[in-house]
Image (cartoon, rainbow, N blue to C red; front, side, top):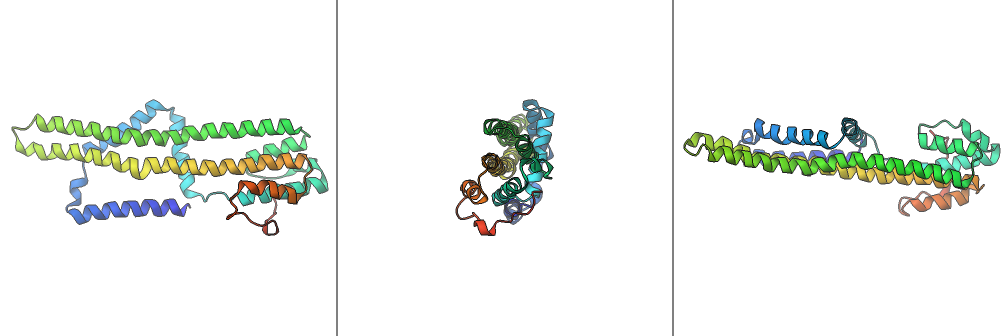
Length: 259
């Protein structure tokens, strides 16, 4: 689990809920019509904007982002060093037998085992990376758009509440509920956008950056293998993708089999 995301959401919810309870009756912040306007309207507009499978993929990606730890680029470097040693000792054909859960790495090993040229490997893997970036952009854009739609529907709910209030000025008993809907819809929209939708979009973007770095490490590692670079040269080339503070020394690299 991503602990930073978990603690961020828990602390944010705790502070807001605590402020509500400390300020008085919490039931004043529950308004079903307001929730229907903001949440229902946001989901409906999102489904109009995107295809259903894109919305489903976005929520699925958000679940995996918060439930799985981020991948360490040092592991990708270690994997490519391991593959370089296999290719130097047993030949490129042995890379076709490498077992891995990464479809990108499997494709790279297949291209190497087939004896593809550097240009072919670079072009094929670059296309794969660009395709992944486009897919992830759509997923991130779903939450960015929801972060825009939620406050907009909050304002729409505010207008609805004000219209209801003004149309019943002769009956003071209706002014309170109408004003509650007017104010709470703005609160709901801002709450969902600020604490959930926009942070999730940001988290997805940061995870995409890390994933792209890992894929670029694999791509450059595959090119280094086809050029028959030794493991130390490969390490020096690939470790440049990693911040010097987080970079593991060559001697500490875990070069166990790719998985």
